[in-house]
Length: 154
Image (cartoon, rainbow, N blue to C red; front, side, top):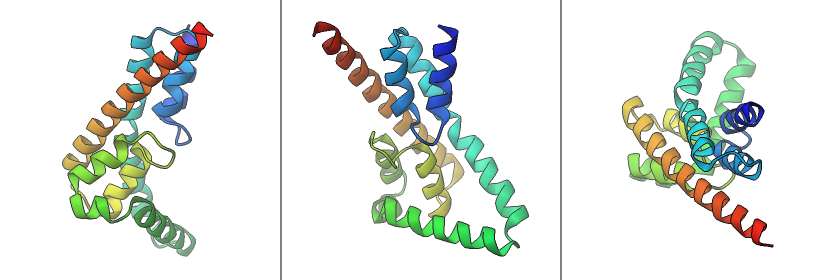
């Protein structure tokens, strides 16, 4: 069980799956739904403060580096294009809905980058991302639970 908890946490905090991968993994490996939900949620909620700190730290120290600056500009352009005008237009609500949708490329990582690019205040961004993550985790937990029940019925 501990091994499954650790893998769930790592999958849920990774940029490749977030809780969208961690929760189904845990449920399919017979971890109780409450544990899967809580571990996935906590790991996913840690993304905003960690990524915000990394963005601030690296931007301050590495901005004079031309390669870093070009990479940040390209990533910012991709984030603006991927997120669209909705986040910029609707601010808090747009960011929350963007993070809430359980699709690849939408989640706490891209939401944090979008909040940084669109200069959404830290408090508002954290609240919007947190609410979006909570709703997304609820959707993933419900989908994983009922999907697993369906698989067991076969």
